[in-house]
Length: 289
Length: 127
Image 1 (cartoon, rainbow over the protein chains, first blue to last red):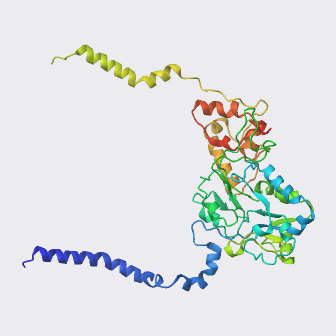
Image 2 (tube, one colour; image 1 turned 120 degrees about the vertical axis):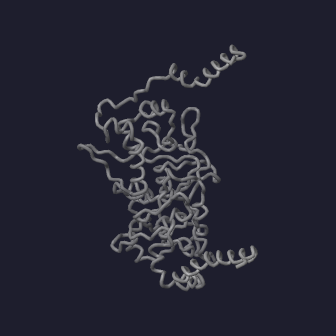
Image 3 (cartoon, helix red, strand yellow; image 1 turned 60 degrees about the vertical axis):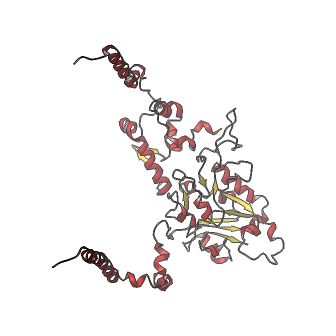
């Protein structure tokens, strides 16, 4: 048979396309991918919802934990006890060697005082209760059950541990600040400068009363935030801020998923609100307003 | 075959060899003795044997750090009736409080600068 070169090339090309394409097309049909990819994502959602709740979509998506530490902050109690809010902030910042850079641009905060208007921006401020905005509102990391910061962190420097605390592993932080962009609560601060800078006489510039002995400082280029004091919980103490409230019950701390815990009972007995619940992060810090 | 410029070529070669091997013989002449870190006077036991701690203290520290920070396993290490907190600052430095005399002597000698001290500090530094 006399095959011309032109004809031979045509046949060879067609065979190659058929040979390469057919098996993959066949596999797609076999696995149902062709149909799955054409159905909208939400079609499968109801059946998958339970699974997504527990396992997430893989990657860095943190699972909801059985044990979830949380906090109830009673704004009224802080109004009754003048200066208590600042005492809590000081207790935390002293214990954890949070530097005071003396300017708001570089400020590092683990727990801080703001007002209702700025703490609860998602709520209507229209015809607000008189005097409500004068009360001190303690804001801190919400230790979300569904934390966006954990999903954003490329090194797993921030992660959710098995008791539901969003931990910072300062050793791993590369200072990319994705977590700060991801956090809807502004609960994370970046060390723009070296917190351990010293004067010539050896005094620390940003630790007015020296360094507290039980917790390391941070270095430049690291993000930090409240970590619910795991080092204190480990030895049976309450977090520093909760301890500072004494027996005023202005702050209650515990496992919100344990119905027998004090915090669970406070939560079921009181109307509480959370910061920006619409963000879907399931915050673990609750407020009695 | 005759070699042209024998004198110049051999002298050049000799100089070349001397310069290339300079780091080797310079270190032979100037090498310092390995330093001896100051050991605590009244404590004779550590979490590992002398040889193990000498070769692997960094692995111990890394393991402790991961257990404490990431796995929330802060259980105190108990060896022969003595308890050791899994911490550089609150564990190791109880017996080895002076960073310069214990850590830095060897690290400097080995030109090794771990960044522990960017955040951690020795007990007396807290004032």
